[in-house]
Image (cartoon, rainbow, N blue to C red):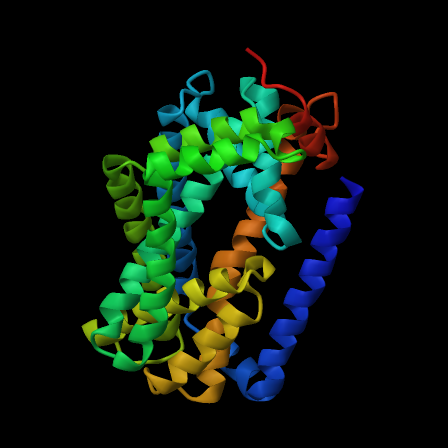
Length: 335
């Protein structure tokens, strides 16, 4: 847990440096003026749309757990597991998702090898949904089509490969004969079977639809932020906001940087200037506000849930230590 906290502190410091960088790129004095003039009554609505995003993504997460047979966990318990993981969004290695797997093992007695594909499929379908939104915007702004299409195709290929069962089983068979891999071959089979079930066409369509609606809601949140900064209302700006948010989020996710820090902010600021005609100061201020209403809000919410329901999530074993996941993966799954 100490190691996780240290990594989170490093992530927070890096995030703060990114915010300072926005101020240096623009003008601190002008950004302060824009913040004073901002219509703060719109910010709760923007945060409310972020909550809608989280609830829709949680619905997908809960649906996926049911699909792999995890039915002994109530939606309320599962909601705390899902949201609590956001507290580690800024740590390297997707630690928040790893901690969720360990919480599920303690609470629902289900091995991480079975639940790991849920985290994978949740991120994969989110990426496909955002890529679709970015591609729709790419019809209007062709200069971004190639990048969105490339990312989308990589995600789709990953889904297709998982669904080619003979190929996957052949690869697993080879792995079983390798000296190191054969020790965890049974876990790899469990992991594959869960991933195969989760990414069947029906489940995939449900998940991508939920993901698309979820990310549209955050795009509308960006639109409200732009209105609060004085940009003129209109359908074109709303659609543009959805496209920009989706594209910048896809780029941030593809970068592998925790929370997409730096990459997402750079994408938002640059595209708001290039496509929406925002000034440097307005673009930087809008980026600052939307990231506080989305990513930073999620981190704070996750940490609050961990603090309030610490005994529920961690139990007496202080199970948040990620080394426990490695130990769990070394032992056979419980019958």
